[in-house]
Length: 214
Image 1 (cartoon, rainbow, N blue to C red):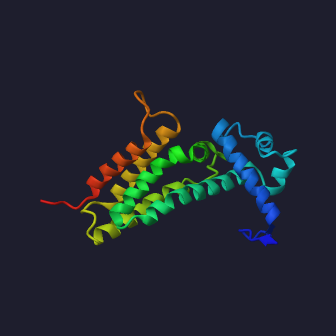
Image 2 (cartoon, rainbow, N blue to C red):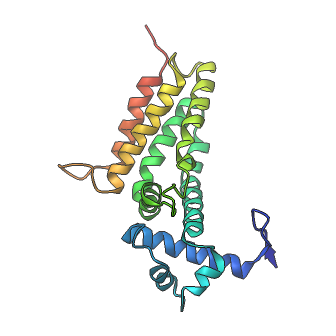
Image 3 (spheres, rainbow, N blue to C red):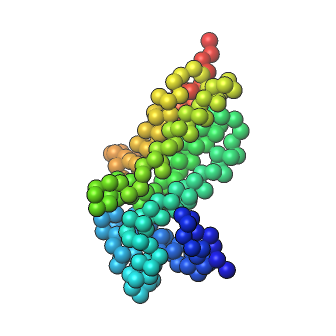
């Protein structure tokens, strides 16, 4: 049996798809552990239990191609982690809270995927110095936030504010909190409680977006 392949490529067998997934998972682990620059085919092949790097070259055109596949898989895993909580929330305000809290929770639940994604976005460049993975994979959230906030305003759940300003404030705040935890740069003092951090961040934006009441 064969699985569909995107981009006009021939269909892959399930065995080939399974091998690709194995390589991608190994690459994510290596990037998260050693960083993008040190994630060589040799290290990835060893982590995947492959006898040589030839199997990676068979499935991927090069490191750039593999890194793109890693980013796609990471986004899929992180979205799959967050989606049930967001879908279970009723109303625009509740869904916004669920998004913020579940996004912060990713640090504790999917740390390797998060570290690998940050490594890729910050360091993956091609031979011409261009980014390999377009940051729009992640930053397109601002557009989704703006749409959600605008719809919530129409429903009367959010107050009057510029949705684009608020959308970028949301993405910036979430990325700052998540990035600091993921890289161990959350500062001095006792270890941060992720659940509390997510709740307090959601509380802040609940106040910022709430309808004004006299």
